[in-house]
Image 1 (tube, rainbow over the protein chains, first blue to last red):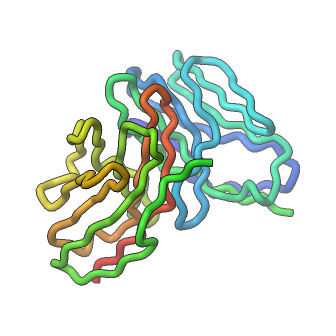
Image 2 (cartoon, rainbow over the protein chains, first blue to last red; image 1 turned 90 degrees about the vertical axis):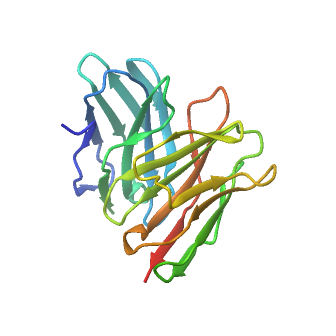
Length: 111
Length: 113
């Protein structure tokens, strides 16, 4: 079983839609959870960072962590064409700071 | 906003040649990393560096790889004898001591021919 699983998509939605992106993980030691956005041939750009179970909101973005189910989500409200990118979930435990990434979900928001 | 800067943005090298990829992390950050992403694949951890020494490394980071922080600002990744399979995007990242959110550079695209 892979440590972090993420549906690669591609996912295509109309402008204004709510987007849900998800990852599951197997390592219960993971404590810190991140969502990155990556444009083609660019570095990952941090969108959201969470530590505990629950929700965290930042503008149109909401990150959700359910440690009991080992499941994390990113919701994008009122999606825009500029949100078109690959979204990567990433996580690490407290003792080892190396990030383990999901494979990324490619999102296209159609105008 | 502070940035992690990587140079060059694209490097083409012949198989067997040595390459050095350069990074300038954010100045008050304490932890430094190299990750790579082969085209169409996951971002993979290579190595972490703290207090002037390697703190963790992956199986990918074999004897052909080395890292160095030659001065107070630069952080380099050297590949001694490049192979075709080293072709990838290489990302440098840095982390402030108390934070948990990494800042990544824009990457160096390495093409080995």
